[in-house]
Length: 238
Image 1 (cartoon, rainbow, N blue to C red):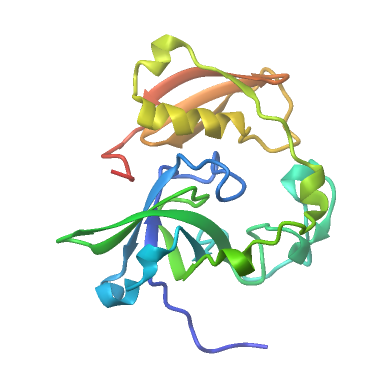
Image 2 (cartoon, helix red, strand yellow):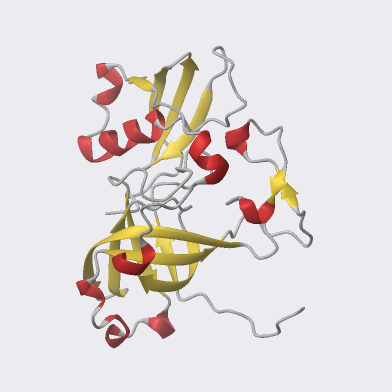
């Protein structure tokens, strides 16, 4: 059934991930990841945020803006199952869905204001590509949104141990702790697809204006290089 009422996005979120590779698989996994939510001009109404400062966490409804497709498949191959097992799309959080809608829970750190953007939400723990459109923002309500005895299906059975990250001091000296701490946690959570297990393969991705290269052997991830990304500007969360 078609709904002809088009949604308007109200804001965009700016994170340290300019590309999809490296983004945590779930929100909240890495609390040190900082992001900014900047509202579109028509939604820069300070009164629309009245009372929001009383909540510690927020739900973000957003658009998988780089995964739009004209058709969809009822089954997908979750990376956590090695990419070889098909499950129903509604049993996964795959970005390839009938409607490209994502859902993330983030921590509201503070609300700031500036002359150019109006009220800006400073958040942490986001698992979202920089520049992603936000459809809606709702407060997280602990007594209804937290279900301690909920079951996690196949996701609970596929959790992997964190990798040991080896980062030479000569490379670490190229940046500061505000970048190194979240970067190490991103790497420890193993950004590779679950079916990649080649110790000779070199992976690369961009994070906080750095181009990071690494390889993984068994349970150890070794950073090979840290270089300034091409065209890098000021960090997105500053």
